[in-house]
Image (cartoon, rainbow, N blue to C red; front, side):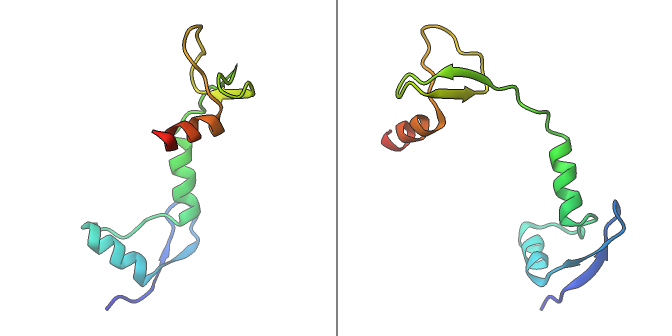
Length: 92
């Protein structure tokens, strides 16, 4: 039903393939326009709009290791490293 199409990226001018599978995916989601950018330019555009998150370092209340978190740790509030946080989520 669908056939691969070769399109030209509006940002970098390189040709890219809009595969039959991608076309089917677009149709299932109700998208009517073909992509205008290649994957690398789409990814770059997506990443450029997000500001870098400031990370803070604290001590994990579970294992005592270093915990890098996206908020300022405060006394009286627990802080967990990524591994301990994931383990707690699995147990819940």
